[in-house]
Image 1 (tube, one colour):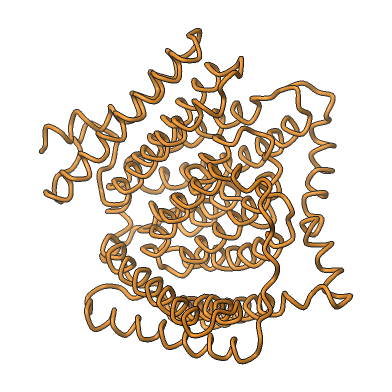
Image 2 (cartoon, rainbow, N blue to C red; image 1 turned 90 degrees about the vertical axis):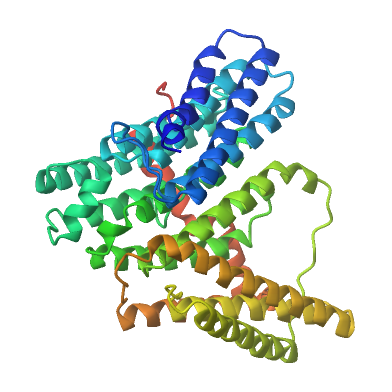
Length: 504
């Protein structure tokens, strides 16, 4: 086992890295075969290491390697390598006939290698290098069509936000190094655990700002919907594997954030506002890819909220689920062309009442079962039980209102029960990775704020079918369609900072 943990981990990012360099100058077919093979072998090695770690949890990477093989990094490396392989396979057919196909595969492999290095980093300096490399390689992918003015401008916008995030990350690392004299994550966590909280909470605020900029949090979100001119495989990998980097950073550094409660509270507030904003704007977007982009913004906001309330297990579970779903959604976005849009379902008061009662019962019942079956596992904060109940209530209410009688109602209830049990019990498994951390106790005012926002969002969705019959609803639709003009403000600022006539 120790032999495998010493020699196999470096191969996971090394294979896509080498493939990225060797793709240059080759034919499109050769570049595609080389890329897919390298990604497939990396995915197999990742799965093998995950099995080895499950069989021998105490096995760690060699001390000479600046990589981590703990539970979080193992989950992430399996996820990223698998998604990279899937996206590269899809790219072969999607880009058939593109004269720049070999260059595309080169940058995709380099991006994949950078993300794999990022999630495996056991050292802050290596993490910083992989963080910056991921952004720069993605920048080249966003410019796959350099003749499109929209693609160039959106790439510039992301470049500016990314450099601000890099500055925050560098500043936080410098603060921690000056206070602890090490960049090794395990040594840093051990130092903080002994009571040496030097550099915190200032570093915590800087890490939080870096994560917010990376994961398109409100009001730094407008670059993400504007990058839709990039090829669909890039969108899929960006939304499934790169945009999650902000959430991963918080989860990876969770032992530090337990000593920076102010930074966690900031993340919770930003995440709540972003989740509500993204959910509302998403509903007004006519284009599939832009709607998916705002959906990602909302999901990233919810993930930051989970981190801010100390529910790191839920955040990791959410990260995995969102990555798999969003990769599938983007790669199948072409199948929606010509599809008939679904009309809004009228949600009557009886259906909503039944939904609220059933959703609340399922959420509280599932949480109670979780407490009884896994008494030693950290339980999700009560506010997330309430949010789960509201989500189930809306789903059940829609199922009842859609018609179909008792059979449809039973199917909706069964689906809601499956979602509640699966979510809660998967949380029980994910939370074991963070059982050693002290429990985070959010301020009551913060809990009240989060609860009010999600109740308001539930009521908004429940009344959405009536929006077209009122002037306020029609006005809100126009503003939401334009993202409440925050993107326009950001574009004007960028236009002054980086005029369009300048070359990259």
